[in-house]
Length: 380
Image (cartoon, rainbow, N blue to C red; front, side, top):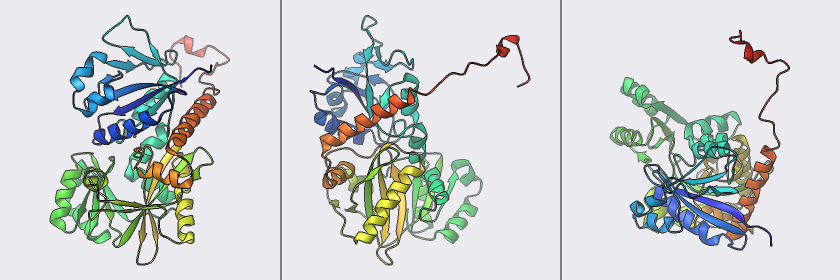
């Protein structure tokens, strides 16, 4: 009998999307084929502790994390170990893992930090690498790259806390002149619309900027595309990615904020989006281009605005660890395109193992012709 693939599902984290991660992880763990995979649950608390037991997810959901801290474990960065070590019981050996499925949305999970740890540990992992993860998390940097690639984005400005506070009046003047009202104020690095507000006047703008600085030192202010539809596409693969059919989000609130996404249950997803084939094909093309532009891998959801006034398409953002519950847009778009939830998970794990195998064929050392470095200081 073929050995099972040892999969670690990592969830929770030091993120404003901690709770969203628990729901995504729950769906993934239930869907993993236990005949194929030996599943390890790995929870990261809101203050960064790693715990792992069969009860971890349930305890996290019930806010009983303290009960799980006896199972505190950590991933070793040693590339020879490839697994978890227990802090509470030194007699327990290293728990080996073949691949990690990180499903931490937002900071310290979607931003390249955990991907960097997994690279050090030399463990295969689902999704984008360090660079694409960091770019995909930073709304400012990704927009700069999209502009460089000729992809259509709404007008925007950005500033750091120090820069804004040194010239508040000047920045307000710039925002009003270039973007006008209404506009959107967003922490540069956040997800699930955490810390995002729509400003209709100067008072709302100042309050929104203050709120955004609670979540990041850098803030993006973006022109609102009024009377727009919200269209999303899912992307899957590597160098030659596939793109799903587009879907449309009908938000229950003025914009698709945290409550509209997860809490009130009143938002709707229309799949496929009721748009012309020409527009659908253009959106799919732009989604693929955005994926390639940031050197993404594995999966992404790409979000767009479609103006009802002139059918102009605006690329909003790319999400490298999209929501992954069975009712989330990423798996629903693929299901409508012909890939079931369980098949999608299989494909993502397969992609992770392929990339890891390929990367391990690369050299990580170089042997110079002379041992020049043994001779003390050199002019180099």
